[in-house]
View 1: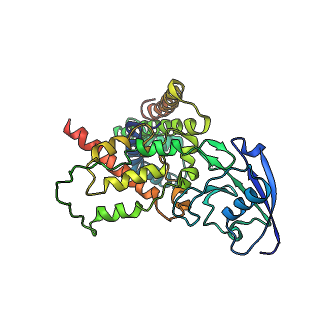
View 2: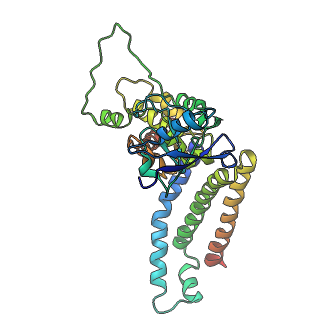
View 3: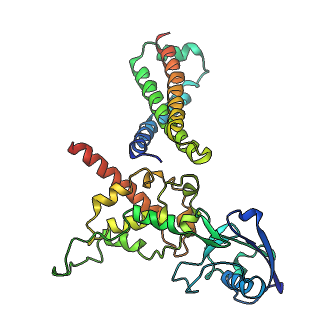
Length: 110
Length: 242
């Protein structure tokens, strides 16, 4: 049921996420030293092209990776197939992207 | 054996759970699950259908679910699987049941063909016999999987097959992997196309039930991982060639 293209997309996004997850965890550990505040986070991310790219790529990778994974789970456990299965995948992917992109936009430009 | 009688539950037919028949079978030393099924058919219920041939783990026809686990019944000692004094025997999972303990193996073998699990020869009888390097890495990979006797235990054990009926399954894919590594097989592109279709190797979640339950202790999961690597290489080579 999983086409080779979707399989590769899921693997490539997994590879992308490995350094991003590690980087994200490292930032969490660094950021909580001496207390955590919204001002400190925004001071780091606001108008920063680097953090915009970091979390922007992260959001795209998560959206693609999770949507394909949910597609496989829904097919194997719920038995959904055909157009309905594709709709579930796209809604999951676009939904995650919308939520993530909104947050990245907010911490960078708002 | 602590008791003289075994409580044997046979799950008969497609609606196995709703058609459970209980038999009390005399216990013996060195008794196999196949011995138990044969005793029931010969002494308790002659209408019981089941399948077997060689009785020594060579033909692969007597596989059934024993206490929910796929096994060769001929090579499974009752003493190893007894739960208290009871044992439950049912038809193989993931295949349509014909009657009682007999399943239709057609889907299993159709997928074997769909995965190009056949020899793709390139020589004629006039050509000299091509030498095979027994120590080459490819030959060792092929040798690791060629003892498969198509018993379908791995296919019954596979949760991906259970959830995704299009998936070719571990046995067919392992066969494809042995042929891909066979120096005398010339069907490389056909095999790679076959194992990367909709039901192809990329559907495997590497849960490993095939490798855990194979009675021959073969390793279909690693064979499928090999196919994933080769289809990936082939995909990017083709993209580069465009």
